[in-house]
Image 1 (tube, rainbow, N blue to C red):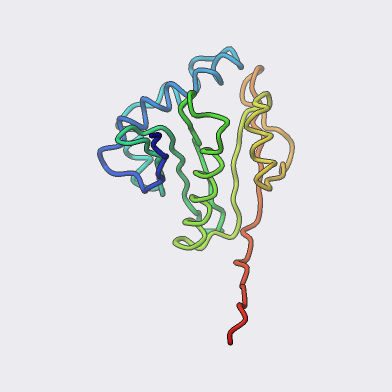
Image 2 (tube, rainbow, N blue to C red; image 1 turned 120 degrees about the vertical axis):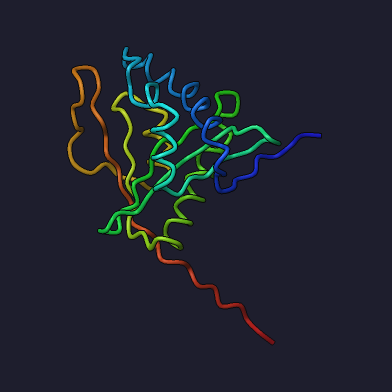
Length: 170
């Protein structure tokens, strides 16, 4: 019998698990850009804990194992900046990333009154770009050069108003 992935708020003790998963998940990005000094690979546990303290953080769990994570925070303008959507390589391309993203968007809109969502990814990260487009994100502005090998593509979408359903009553 298989287990299903559950999505919950991260707990204090999840920081080390998230950092290890982050390190594993960003190896492909580092290889794609020929740069193993990207921030997700050099971030320390203390830096991650500080980042997590000021964000809404979700994890996907398969039993006790953290197999996915995403974090985000809403700024004063109502923009929810969503960052570091990660899914264990063995579970990628099964919809977990979309589930994590959708759940975080819902929570940021409900709890922090987000008006829009903003993400970024590398210009060569075609899988990420396709997923964000599938989720309704559109590129805003020109790609931002970071190094001679890497430019960041910023994408955004507005928070959709909840759809109200009026059921017929007898």
